[in-house]
Amino acid sequence: MEANGIIEALPDTDSLETGPSGTSDYESSLNESMFGSLTSSVNEHVWEYGRRYHKFRYGRYPLPNDDEEYKREFLRHIMLKEMTGGKLLLAPIGDNPQKIIDLGTGFGHWPIEVGELFPCARVIGVDLSPIQPVWIPPNVEFMVDDIEDEWVHASDFDFMHLRFTGWVIRDIPKLFRTVFQNLKPGGWIEVQDICPKVTSDDGTVKQDNPLARFYSLVHGIFLDKYQADILHVEHVPEHLERAGFVNVQKRVWNVPVGEWAKDAHLRTMGGYFREIIMDLVVAMAARPFVEAGLEKTEIDELVNSVRAAMGNKRIHAYIPIHSIWAQKPPS
Image (cartoon, rainbow, N blue to C red; front, side, top):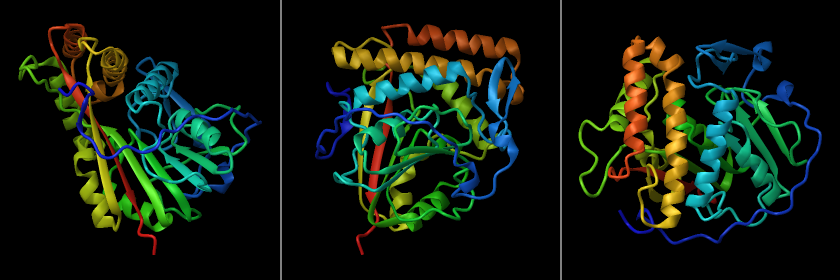
């Protein structure tokens, strides 16, 4: 693995620094959805397998939306900022974007910080769950909806952002075509996602590695039950080009799994990544694995073996994280 964790790098963009924060009372925009009609279930949740899940479009998103999932998403947000040197985006969108949207925003960490960074921009976060904060910058708003619905009121965005969203998108080429239609000429899209292929440079990741076995199992379940491909990010550049985008660029980081790296920066990232993945394993052990028919003993064995493998510093595993950005032709 390269010393800086990068296997493919392009010319760097200017660093972004977060500006002063501001807060305001947040009132939901549910009646003015950009994506289609909504039902009363958007504000409701269900408890299953000891975890909380969204009720809107029940089963559409297989992971919980509770406090444990908040912790996982927050750690992931911190890790990604550590990975990018504090940058919230790599696309060269300029200093004065007017309209930004985060598709699949989760708990809203990214749009809140982007709203502080660009106080003159309208920043929108969209998710299936109403789990975002109430106190937010005055230029930030959240909507509950399904981004794969028809976009009925969305247009003229300067920047559209998707982060760790593709795992549950059923038709990514269609979504990219829709994004293209609703960007301003010259506008940008950026996609960031994990490519869950566990590997090493020194052969310490064997074919029977428990984490590799976990992701192989998840891949099959997501294809079968949710019609989504967790390896989608490998094909994002070609999908973007087919949708009409130009200036497609990519940067890939090899992020260590666990604190085995000698470099302090990589070791910090690896510690975050281990906790993030372990929380994902536990979340998958609830609804997705149970509904896929796995026995409790099989699930427990997999969870324990993954935990042990990620704690073994003799296993020098890493997983790629991709950032891809592209532009709608200016005219």
